Image (cartoon, rainbow, N blue to C red; front, side):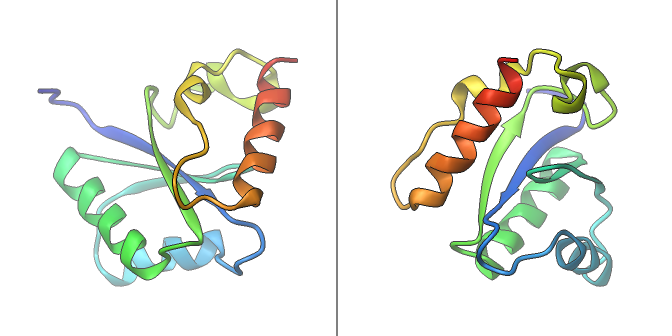
Length: 118
């Protein structure tokens, strides 16, 4: 079992009206001590295992079809895997459409793959 923090990607469906600012203010209002960073696909959330998973459960309940969650193998502060710098991002190899994901998800994955393979 890992001792360090866990980092998760929160991919936001662009057509549902879910906003990054809404998720950040939710964490603040509910007193979750999580570290967040806005990205081109949504945001990254990082904290210790129990805290971050508790917050992600709240997000799943509040936005059942507006977000997709995926664990990220790198810390929030790791810039080697940023799409803007065109560095390889190995976290997307396991990101595949699954049950319950609409056509927006396939489009979003296609955009990420194109950005990370450039």
